[in-house]
Length: 376
Image 1 (spheres, one colour):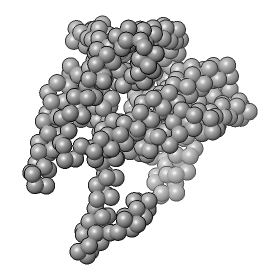
Image 2: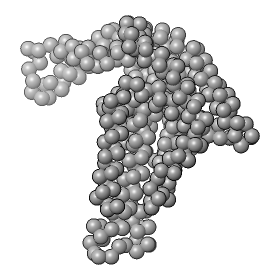
Image 3: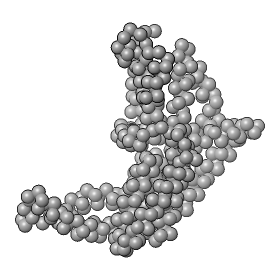
């Protein structure tokens, strides 16, 4: 088969896959979540299988323990999260007003520097109005997330059906995938093109390493950071500390983003709460200590160098996936991003070994090709 025909074949396959995701986007969430859980827990099932425990009982025990742990965590933290979310939602207008007052002198100075007439326009009121409409709306949505979700589920029959489908079908999908995982892998290997089987298996191994590093590593890091920040901020007495800490941990799925957002929000809340620089420095120190702990202990132990995904690439993939396919697209974003990264590196190496890069009728020598791969 010519290269052109192969390109047409794979392009058609990707178009069919995209069309499938678009058509069945609304029903794929339980299957995507189930597959993610199966992928996450499969190493434990494989380890128990080596102890002569059948995959069926091993999968049932591990999945049950995992779901029990998640349910227990949610049962413990949900009341506190809901309470702090409602409190933040109620007190947000006061924070916006105080922020507008603090920013008003700076606003006038900037307007005068730009040659604007500061007497005919109430810049403070204008700033407050802008903040109230945009930044305030975003924060109030985040602060009232629990109330909004609960209200949506109660008011929408379709949302209730979707929730039930996730709660019922997601564990079933995960269970059956965990049992059949070796057969699925063998089936996938058997349908690979014979001429390129070894190359494809090598690429799939690299993709698996990156995805595993993210799913089993970065998510674990985010979970631990969320617990550390939430507990530390609560002990320090910061208002909404538990909520802010967990949100900072959740956003740490994108390296540095969670800690940066959590630091800014926590410092602002700490200043409004106490007005003392010492207390603000204490709150900032918590995030500094968290970053030191993450960089020197947590990340090296759980991830090492296995992820290899740039934070900006992760951020873009999450936004793109969410924009195209909603919540399902966000769950698929990182695996797709990891796959594209490996395929792009492979294509770049092929390009550097080709006449299009060398500019001559000869391919690069083995040493030059290796050096080009290292430099790339």
